[in-house]
Image (cartoon, rainbow, N blue to C red; front, side, top):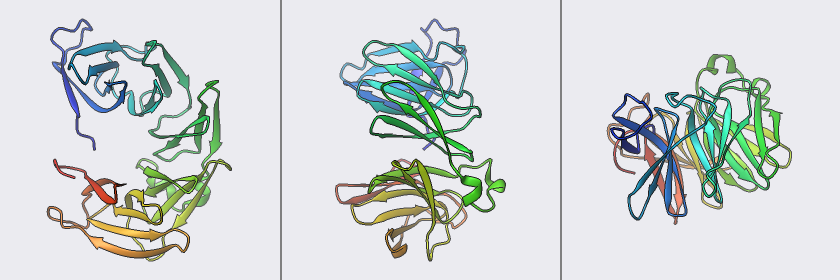
Length: 277
């Protein structure tokens, strides 16, 4: 949600950092330990969830410790964590939590943020901002391939949105990865077999979409602005129902929710601000 999830006191660390606290925005749990990449420096913080003990490691050794905003998301593959770039670097950092080995994998010629998706032997990196390409990394050989997004051919008015997030959070469903659009009433469907995107404009819906969830039959989305939840039949491209959520002072021109999840028969809405879901 953009809020620091953990703070680490830096007084006794020997890395020459001036900050007393270092904020962390994301993390992965592997074998009882929480691995967190700092937003404010090039370091990995590791906390034992039972003892509370904290370890500190240098992150990407190709960059100074003081470098900021290097990685913005991550995904776990067994004992391996992939840290994904968020604008200042164009490399994925592959980190082995057992051997502590780190490997940088060059993926791009231009900065971007990425949503990671594991499918088969591939790790797919789907761009958040406008990009002509998306990427895949072979989890075994580390081979990198790039594929066209066809954004410009399929999305009208894209030039006006190049500096904004286009497609962000998504969900695996029916053999594809689906993402709602932050700039219009669109769905992006990624077909793993064809390595292609399909773009769907939702009928009878006019708002941008903050996030998508899937209940096994229908998709559920939450509007980027305001607090409207909708149920969508993908096969018929039909809105089944809409629900207005009473949350704070709902405003049609203000983003209230970051994402939506479906778990144990319930929908969970993640607020952009606040302490409740």
